[in-house]
Amino acid sequence: MKKSLFILIILILPLLLGFGLGYGVGHRNLSLPSEKDGGFDELFSSAGYQTSGKDDSLSDQISNHRQNAITRAVATASPAVVGINVTEVREYTYRNPWSQMFGDDPFFRQFFGDKTYKQEIKGLGSGFLISHDGYILTNDHVAGNAKEITITLTNKAKYKAKLVGTDLVSDIALLKIDGKDLPYLRLGNSDDVLIAEWVIAMGNPFGLFDISDKPTVTVGVVSATGMNLNAEQGRIYRGMIQTDAAINQGNSGGPLLNSDGEVIGVNAVIFTPNQGNIGLGFAIPINRVKSIVAELKKSGKVERNFWTGLEVQTVDARVAHYFDLAKAEGVIVTDVKRRSPADDSGFKPGDIIIEVNSEKVSNDDDIMGIVQNSKAGDVLKMKIIRDKKFINLSLKLEKNPS
Image (cartoon, rainbow, N blue to C red; front, top):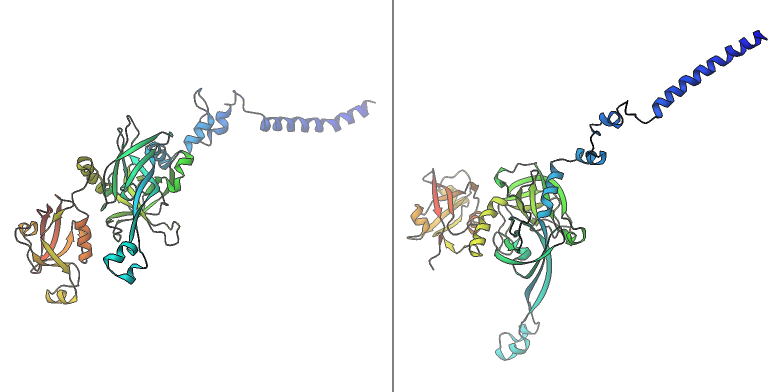
């Protein structure tokens, strides 16, 4: 009997020991952290989260952990971005096909002449507040011809806006709403923009702002600076900031921000050969816009009725050979009007202009674009070649006396 009991104990003891060890290990792995063990603090400390403290929730800390410069800039800027709905009256001309048959005969023209009619057109775009008292920046092609303008803020508040002033050449319009202590964006320095730095485009593409209450955000980099585009309907786009941040229809007039949340440009132009975004968007540098805004606040327009007294033509191969130039570039001064700004600045026929305001001049289109995008009172710094020597001259654009 004793012998049998001893053998039974020998057989059961290893099983009891194994069960005890297994239970202890399993219990340790599956149990929730206790206060003695440090609780959840120990569990999440390796991930960088701190869970101790009465006011900090784990979800808030995880959210904060995902914050970066872009998300912070967007959070700060969003309340100052606005949606713009406009109603404008456009005039159309109907070309009567019978008018060509009868020519300019006065009798038949009254029956078969061309007809003009007006039609109300509704449009939308983007803008952003630049002051606490309600000044808003947008594009001229968004609101420059508007009969009625409605501004929508992110808090659903709607305002009727008035057009303070607009400038077709620079494609900038300044609006004003009646408000106090409104959120607004800081204007940065577009001269300090770096190629490949992160930028944020915000706005109201396709009217989505009215649905979501918040501006649409796209992110990309600065692809290039100083880009010159072909003039469109009297608008001159020079020195533009190119970005691959998606800019779609309705984004016009919205801000292009750097990662500090500062405005470095006003979104204005996109290239859409296939009616889609291909990563070619362009913004007007904010440093150029600042002087435009000052003029619009002051007088509602930008004074561009100026003269230079210069007549120029593109340097071709023949002219380049005659003046012994290395290559055909720049423009040659063919005439200087007496007692004109150019005459006062010391220009002479035969001078070859190769730079204006540090911008290279290749032909007469270049210099016309630069001059036309200036305003009365501006001083243009010009680099010229005279007698095979480089000379710097300053030309002040004076208001045309006529």
